[in-house]
Image (tube, rainbow, N blue to C red; front, side, top):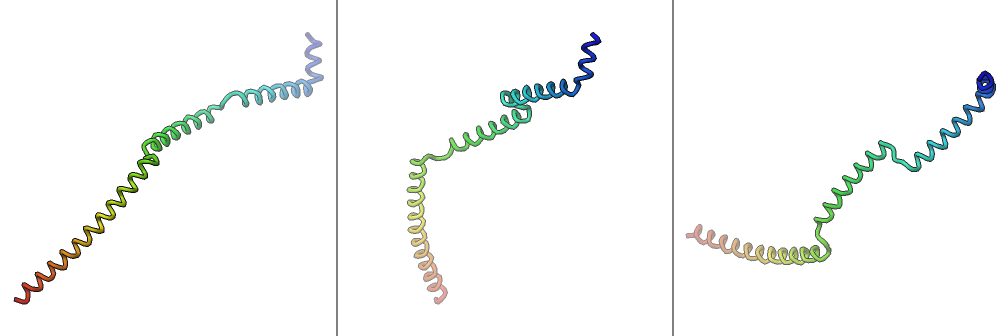
Length: 104
């Protein structure tokens, strides 16, 4: 038993170097295989964000719906222009009627 203690005392630096090297190798192999807690929380947060984005993207119109919306907006714009022309004409007529009543 005394011989073991003498060996450890005489070779303390070598033993600690070997122990530190083994610890480093084990730690590096574990880091490459397992996820740390902070990384796991971040991954869970990212997964929630990605899921939210996917649900938003799923509710967006696809190419066909976008094309239909574009056509409908063009029709609405045409209707708006026609209505604006009619309103201008009516406004002119109302102005003329008011002017006629004022002259009487």
